[in-house]
Length: 91
Image (cartoon, rainbow, N blue to C red; front, side, top):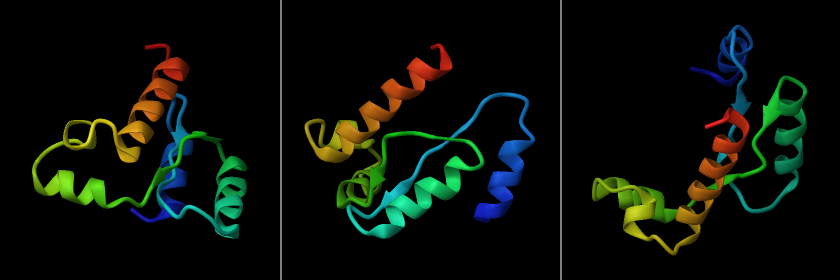
């Protein structure tokens, strides 16, 4: 699904939604441009899932990053995202 069609599909949902930026780079002006463009359409999660090797290695081992490297940055990002989702989804 391309980005424009994903946005269109999300806008037709009856429930609330938020964008999660994943495979993000750690710096550069695209970060601000991405957040600005997405925020015009909906909520953007404040947690960015960065482009990290741990995701690929964990997937190859059939593990989640929290299992593969529980104290790593990738695991911290996922746990922070999950906490944000629970708070905003009322879970």
